Amino acid sequence: MQWSDVLADKSLDDLPYKIELNQWGNIEMSPATNLHSFYQGEIIRILLRKMPKGKVMPEFAIQTDNGVKVPDVVWCSDEFLKKYPIEQSPFPAAPELCVEVISDSNTYKSMKKKMKLYFAKGAKEVWLVSLKGKIRFFTPTGEIPESGFGIKKILK
Image (tube, rainbow, N blue to C red; front, side, top):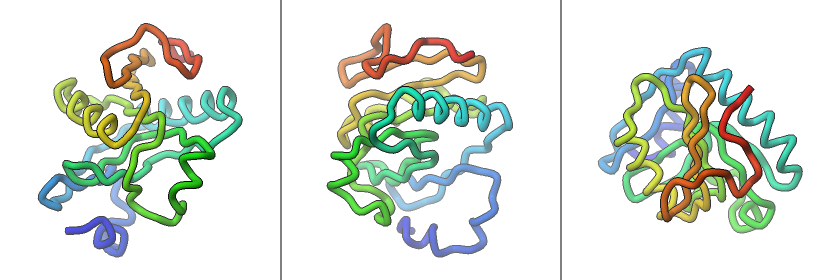
């Protein structure tokens, strides 16, 4: 299955799950809770306030070497968006910042794999947000104590 098939399949429109494709084109789904959605919204609100240039978007499709992955929130610089038409889906590259809210169904091992995929596609930072509001920041070289984007470790 290709990402265009997922987008065209109307039976997938109203699922309460985030959909991604693995390297074989099979659909993978992750259920989201209201708390998960709350933290997505908090990240979006904070990024809109702190990062006035560029765009903040939820559920952004990226073609990786292991299928299409969809970070919960991304921040794209204006320069990044000049390279790719916004109508393109999935994007062939990762935006500068990718954020994953860690659901109970996620493991740290699976998140490490996703981070590696995002970095391979050009992400500069990946944030992992726990359902308790703690944020961990990562660059391609590993975990860092503070984000280069000026965000703190705990959401309030």
